[in-house]
Length: 461
Image 1 (spheres, helix red, strand yellow):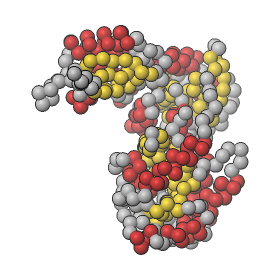
Image 2 (tube, helix red, strand yellow):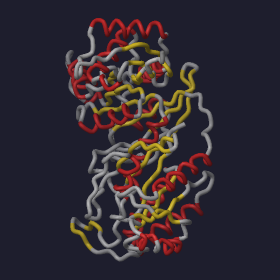
Image 3 (cartoon, helix red, strand yellow):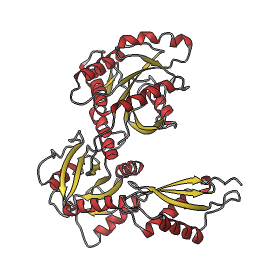
């Protein structure tokens, strides 16, 4: 089951980024006293009581300021432009998240902006049909002292429910908040079982994702346009290929950080991230006419962080001049820019003409098979002990990493549990060495493998 998604919603400077950092247990979001510091969306993994979920930090919307014609102009609280922006943020959060944390500020009290957000959240809950709407938990941040906590009762007027007084800065009250949040996940239940191979098509805007989907399906299922950002939703399409049930997930393009428009497009990125979480294999589309960009590497990094298998698909191959070295040169460029994914296959296609599109699904299914492979315990230990004999770990403060025993504890993705004397002695470069030795025996094409080190307890005499 995909990790639940929790969206942080509220006006600027109520402490969304501070709470985000508190829940993620690391300083990921930029925190500043100037309202509107968060202009981009951040995602991170959080855990409470054994439940893992994804939190999404969003930029607040200020009803008194807006960008009009390049200059910042005052806006009335009820202006159409402000309401449109806040509705785009709040309503799509309701549609895409599994829970919404509505954050207010005890220091400022209930403001007109809070009332606007609350009205939209209440209306969305009433109007949502067919699919259970996610719960909204009202937080009153900056309740740092008794005087402020005593004023929390006024937030009942928002009509959201019981307000939770917290201090994101000091962590006060976050335990009760997280208990309530995790309880809502348990009430939502499990998803239906899906035995199909889930393949997501991801990439920057306008690289040809919808065109590839239509070519694979042989029909005009998705809208195709030369305007970047046409696809706003993740579209699931079922098909059968040589007896294998497949679900193709077409996603909205991911723009470069800092160029994501507020509102609908910002949450289109959220939909893309959710689609990647739901997939087993991701087709990362790259535009041959522009070459591999930093944003392509950014998307590839997210796919790796989600432990998904990946195939790099270079589209629009028909649109560039070529000689007998062009493909090798482009492949080397991909390997260089995506050096953290040395195991991924690279295909060169044209969704427009159909060139080599017939290789996409067979390669994706092959990568999926590699994702499910299991190595025997004896084979794995033979590989690791031989690797350790040929190249021992460097010493650290006079101590050296020793590998005692290893076993594969799961597939999808392949995960190996290695018992050692002290996991702290394992340098990143040595773990990469061990991974490469495993791949020499079995390639795990296009698939990340996870090495988990655990200290073996010394037996009592």
